[in-house]
Structures are given as structure tokens and as C-alpha cells.
Length: 348
Image 1 (cartoon, rainbow, N blue to C red):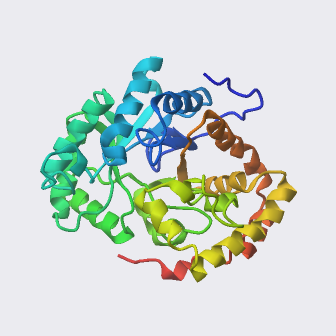
Image 2 (tube, rainbow, N blue to C red):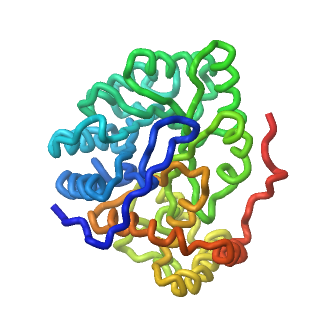
Image 3 (cartoon, rainbow, N blue to C red):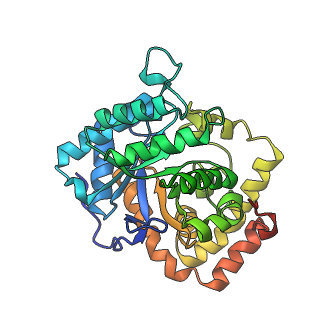
């Protein structure tokens, strides 16, 4: 296994929202990688590198590679003999169609699928429980009360400690809390949204009241927006890059925007961030990740990696946080030009 670099910064741990649970500021997820285009050996090497670097939070989902991502993570935990109480493991329920012969009732957030989906995820992981369980998307065909009751059942039976949401609207999270409060149940603690320099509205505006009212914690994904914020696509998309060869729906959707005005605008923004990164002595990937971590509402930024070196590179972004002074953040803000208007918050 790859040795941890001697100059790697000490991992930072943050409370997950208004809870007593601490998660590493940088976490490792299995989306697009483990169980997919990255083989077991490299997947395990990345997971081991993350653990050795102080990362304690590992995220996956029933829908990642048809459940194989969970199996890969479970095999790694067993292989390395990690103590269960030393790590925080999450999975997400919504897209379980690949795990059944009939897609009917193997997706969404019905009581049936939440309970059966969690049981199946635990079996694939080889674990008795997960620390965090997410509703991977909102299910607007299932009554909110049914969903809230089902996730509380999962907690009450010891199969998860906390439940949360992913890519829900603020009003939907608030509705879940209203149901939970009315029934004397537990509401969603955390949300897993898309958040980076180019995608900001939910985290910086829409969720503002949720931080104050419910102590919502954010475990954001795609801090580099699929590699866009690394700067490697400014001059075009290399054929051997993820954007060039991946058939994942999200990556394909990004690729389809290459000739659009929005893509050209984003590439211009990314290019204009380069002088700031150069002056700070870092690459643009580190700048983008550190910028996400600078937000005090971010409990953890979920990163991906197909090689151990990428894990260590992400962790080194922690070194940049003290350099992101108010002046530097203002300089970045002038380049981005997309700060959400707080007046556009959704009110409940």
C-alpha cells in the first residue's frame, strides 16, 4: 500500500450539523469509482490511504454501480480490520432497482423500500448498521409521514444513528421536520447537496434558515464539479479524461454542454481563477476544495479518488485554509460573480 506523505496536514474533524458526531472535513465517496471503473485493488488502496490520512467518513449508496460500491467498501473494512467505532459509514436509499428482478417497489422512499433497501445495503456492506442513512432524492409520490416514520424505524431498530437527505429542496426538508416534530420523531440532520464554486444557491441561500432552525449539517459532493474546476478542460476535453470517456449520466450531461454558452462562461471563470491559485502556490483543484471547506456550514466535503495519490492531494488542500483570508475570498468572489442573493431564500 502507498505510504502516507510526511508533509500531509493533520486531518480536521467537524461536528455534523447540530449533533455530537464528528466527521472528517474531507471524506471519501464511492460515486463513479468503486465497483465501477476502478478495480478492487485500487479501490482498497484509496480507502486505506484515506483511513491512514485521518479520513473517518466513507460514503456510498445502494445505487452506485448497482450496489457493488457497497460491497467493495465492505470488503475493504473487513480486509483492513478497521474497528467499526473508528469510522463513519453512510449509504443512501432511493435507486435500488438494480438490486431486484422487478423495479417496482425497489426504488423511491416507501416504507417497504426504505426498510428492505437498508437491509440489503447492510448485507452488501457486511455491517450491522450504518452511521448515516440518506434519502438519496425526494420521493414526491410517497407521503412525507410514511418516509419520516420509516427512517425513524431504521434508527429505532439500530440500523442507523442519523438520517438525512440528498438534493432535497429546503421546503421539503422543512416539511419533514414539521412531520417529525408533530409525531415526536427525529427529523433529518444532514443534507448532501451538489456544492462548489459554480453551484452555490442551495447551500448559501436556500438552506440558510435550516441551519438556524434545525442545525442542518452539510456533507456536500462534487467540490470540483466533475473535474471542471481543476482547469483541465479549459483548452478542451482530453479523450482519456473522465469527461471524455465516462458513460455515467451526470458526466454525460456535463459533456453535452461543451458547446453551450454556459460551458464557455464556466471555462472563462475557471481560467480567471488560475492567477489566484498560482499566487497561492497551489493548483486549481486544491483552491476549489479549500474554498468549499471555508464555508462554516460544510461539515464534510465528499471527494472521489481512483488512486491513493489523489486522496493525499485532496487532504493537502487543508493547508490552504489559513491562506484564504477575507481579501483572498473577496478576490475569488469577484472572479466568480455568482454569489447568491440572500433575499432569494425560500421561506416556509
